[in-house]
Length: 143
Image (tube, rainbow, N blue to C red):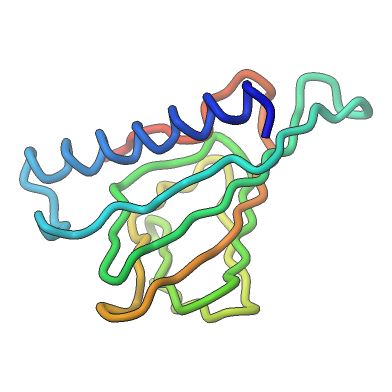
């Protein structure tokens, strides 16, 4: 992992932790003792055929019972579950249970209202491919 990718992964992990704390402090619906996701940027590549765009690949590890804060990605995002089962949802659409080998899509305007490990006893792991503007953040807090 290059230095840029390492700092981006650290920043994304810190943002998720801060968002979780903010959701709890403001009476969010997430359990106060829910574990946090562990996020790591694996790769990021500018797309020469699409000036100003890049594709970024991250891994997300959900410990048992992990819950994400409400957020959005100013990007097209494809989630692919590697291990375990997760529950995902965007505002205005029903929650989806996604198992290993299955996918989930989020558009750039979707508010990601539900993101959690379906299990209280087993971890889950997934990768996310994000197509986004080069200088846009990976995660944006939302209400």
